[in-house]
Image 1 (cartoon, one colour):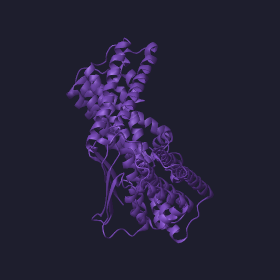
Image 2: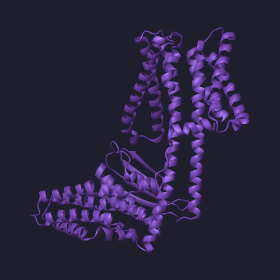
Image 3: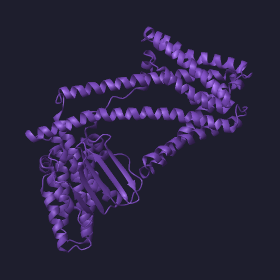
Amino acid sequence: MISVTAVPLALVNQLSLENLLLSFLIGVGITAATGLFLFVATQAMKRIVPLLPTVRLKLLTLSLIGLAGAFRGLLFYHSVVWLNFSQPSDLFERVITSTATTLFWLTLISVVVEENQQFKLRFESYFKIETIRRAHELSLVNPIPLSPEIRASLEEIEGVLNKTFDQTIRSSINREVLLLAGLQLRQTIDQKIRPLSHRLWIKERSIAPKTKFFTTLISGLRFLDVPPKLISDSLGLISLVNLSSTFGLVRGLVGAFTVYFVSFALFSFHRDFLKERFLGRIYPNLIFLLMPGLIIAFFQYLENLYIFEETSGVLSLVYVIIAANLALLISAHSISIRDKESILEVIDYGLKAAPRINIDSSGGKDAQVASFLHNSLQSELLALSYQLEESSKSPDSEATRALLEQLGSRINRSIKDDFESFVQTPLERLKKIQSAWRGIAEIRINFPTDSPTDELQNYLLVQIIEESISNAVRFSGATEVSIDLSYSDENALILTIAANGSVGPQNPAGLGTEWLDLYAPGNWQRTFSESGSELRITL
């Protein structure tokens, strides 16, 4: 709204009924073009984000927002010329003003979005972790039967694997047969295992409540709550940049002080005397929201006329829109934050007071199966597929026959039984990881002598390790993976997985990323360098 209305406000001295609509259309076009510029630029930036350290990423993000502002300023300037309006300011002033205001508003929006994402992460983590933990505890004492749907899906996967194995051993073992078997295993992963693991994932059981924009705005207006210092700081900063770039530093400082003082005084008065009286009443709050901008415009008119002996015309009326919009957004955001904190407090208290209340154990079992399929079974089959391709170089060797026996062993084991066994004794699987990838990648595992005894923790560790190895080999061509487990000073587990290989554009966040966010929210970090990648997790 502010970006669109900025055009007719800047051209207000030249407007008539005939060109008023045209000025709004210019604003719409400039805003849409700036949005398109940001979209294209952010898509391009995603490709290099994994290669940058955090500090450089923040600088790049700020630079991108600044470029969007400069782009908007250039569009504004040339659109005015193209449509035969008189320029309200020169090119340099227009670009500086547009860049500063775009930086302010988009940075403010980014803060709000980040806070909302953190709330979602915390909300979902409460339910997901407790659901998994509850299901795991129950499975150790009284195993939960798999649903008929899951059983049918697992049997379908077993059928596909059996068909692959039968086709292989019934054929003459040669290079083409082994390569085809490896390809079919990867197709089974992509077409059967990945879709099933995503379908079973319990995202739909713990979706955080979404903020409805217009509903929240109405609440912000109805229960108007605007911290005086926050809005006066924001309005003062906007004014300093815009007025200084347009009228010079001295006039900018005087104008910014006026804006700061008036807004602070009025919103302090509202907080102390009007807030309770107008609580829940839309129209009185709406009328009040228009007052700061009108009073600021009046004072600026007087100071421009009597101090600087100039006039800015009706341009000062822009503060009616800016002050009202900013106050409403701050109020809505404040109410939203308080509501979210209250929700999290209630959930946290409820889980501590009765940690097993309203936990759907079948949902937990679904999630366990999903993570087992995605992290463990997928990793095992992927390793087998690579081994088959490697063995195609010498199809008649002893190693190839041993590999086919290993494949047969995997086929003859029920996925359901394998899953139940893994839930009970996950560390047993670590012994098989190094041999599974032998010849494809060298896997070094360094665990302390006092390995963790918590079976749930071990269940997580092994799946993270298997998922990381398969990703490193499949997507980066890693030939060396180093896995280290240690304890922090607070006795938390620190898992570090380093892999060599090429680092290219990263795929969008998938189930593996969601899985890490579930079990280690805010406590994992993946870094990239020329030598490879490193994943560090605190559990």
